Structure formats: structure tokens, C-alpha cells
Length: 384
Image 1 (cartoon, rainbow, N blue to C red):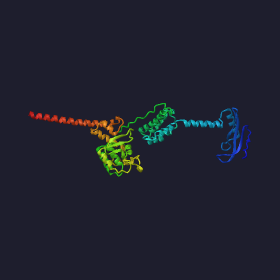
Image 2: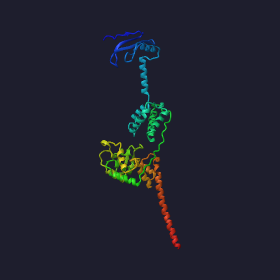
Image 3: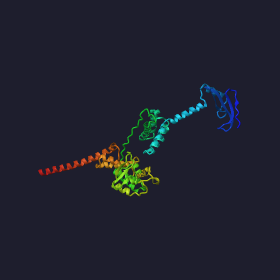
Image 4: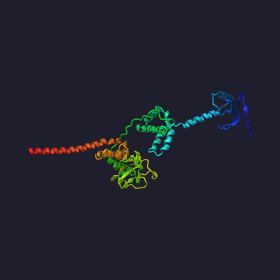
């Protein structure tokens, strides 16, 4: 193949060849420059005549700038770009820490929800930042933006996830932490829902009439046992000890496996359920269920309960309230039944137990008072 002919220009060290542009596919001039720097001859492309709008004069200016060091040579520029890319690749941003966090904790409970929180709220605004580069203003902007459309509890969960990712990086010695404390918005989660006797009666009637195979049974099981929604989703037949009368809760909210008693009402309900899967309340293709809110909310609405009443978690509160109000269950036992990790969570029902105790004390007072009145009446009768 014949050598490509170089053609000189009126500028020393600037020449061109005829070539084809990779962008346009047309034949045009390709300008080159040749110069000496640090005792080394450098010859490199300056640009295409049409594609880069290159001229001999512009090529000559590039040559002059590179000789005096005001502009990098092509090789030096590529090296600088490579170093910059490597620096970016090695930069442990929050997004990269999140990827490492997922790799080490793929089966973490609630990871699907955390993924949604990260993708929707954290990654778009903070994903490209390193923890040590975060400013309080960055987090404040995220917090204020979320508070416009989201509840304080949601905002707290998002910021808690951000803090957890950063703490993971620090603990693994992958990065420096944020240089300030990430403040959490105040949240009042101590919402205790209850139903009046008439509301409970309406709900039981709505459950009886509903045709969904699982929604009503899950609502009843919550009333009988106080189980959480996720615990019922994960519940398998092998977890139920019918002989001893216990339900084993695997991977519950508190983390450690627990067991709760199975009363006769719960036993009767579970015995009435047809076994079609290893799960008691299976989802699609007999795999673990992940949601049922539409079906249980439909029953709630048919019963005429408030829209704010949480169809499953609210019934867990009803279960706890009924036990506390009975006066027959102490708070420690209630804590065990609800599998609360801390007694502070159970403390919200203390006033109900106090009321039950007061009623019991009133009964004793009435008995004594009635006896005293009878004695006084007998005394009056004797003095007549």
C-alpha cells in the first residue's frame, strides 16, 4: 500500500494529508503539527478541515501553545483524561457505597423498600457525592423537598437510610464519614387505633360476606393473635405447632425468631384454611405473598370504618387494646404477646390497663360500701 502523501502549508511544522472523515464519510484535509518539546519530537493530529473547522492558521496556533506548555499534547491530554476517569472510578460516592452495601446485605429485611427510597430520593440528589463532601445544606434541601409531599415518617426513613449507608462505609473503612450530624425530623408514630363494639361488629359482618379467600382470614388472625402483616405473609404451615398450641414467627420485626400462643379461635381459623402451598397465605404461583392492601381495605370500607384506619396494623392495635382493657393481662405479658422488643412500645396501652384496674377497684369499693350500708340499715332497724 503506497504511503500517504504529506503536503506542506505556509506554516512551519504544519502539514496535512487527504483522508476520510469518520463522522461525515467525506474526503477532506486532516491537519497535523510537528514540534520539539523537552528534546523530543512530537507529531500529532490537529484536526479535520470540515469536521473540526481546522485551518493551517489554527493548527499553527495549537502548535505554538503546545510548545510553550499552555496546551497539553494529545498524549498528555489522553493521560490526564485517563487519570481523571480513574479518580472518578475510585471515588467512593454514596452510590458506590450503596452498591457495596447491597452486595454484603442482599437479604436484609425491608431491602426492597430501601431500594425504592434510595432510587427515588437519595440517588438523584446525593448519589454522586462522597460522604465527606456532603454539606448540611445538601441534606437540608433533601429534607425540605421531601417534607413538601411526604410524611415526616417517610422523610425520617429516607434520612436514616442515608445515614446507614454512610455508617456502613465508615465501619468498613471505605471512606470518611459526613462532617456533621444528620438530623432526623421529629415523628410521632405512637398512633393507637381502636374500634368501638359497633364498629367491630360491622367489620366481622363485612369479613363474613367478603369472597376474598385470604383477606378476611388474615384480618381475623390478626384479631386472634396480634400478628403483623409481614409475619402472616411469611407464615408457613411448618411454623404452626398445632400439638403444643404455638405459632413460630420466623424473622419477625425484632430480628430474633419468636413464638406466640395459638388460641382456640386461631386454631379453628387455621384448620379451616385449605392447604394449597407451603405458605398459609400464599401469593402468586403459591410463593410468598407481598401485598394484600386492596383486598383488606375493601373490607374495611364495606364495614364503614374510617379511611385512616389501617386494615391490618389497626387490628393489631385492637387486639392489644382488648387485652389491656380486660384487666386480666399485665403489660409484661402483653409485650411478650406482641413481640415488642422494648417495653416502651407496649407502654402506649398502659392507660387502658389502668382504667381496667380502676374499674376492678371500683367493684371492690362497691361491694364493701354495699356491705357497710346493709350493716347500718340493720343497726337502724335494731334501734327502732
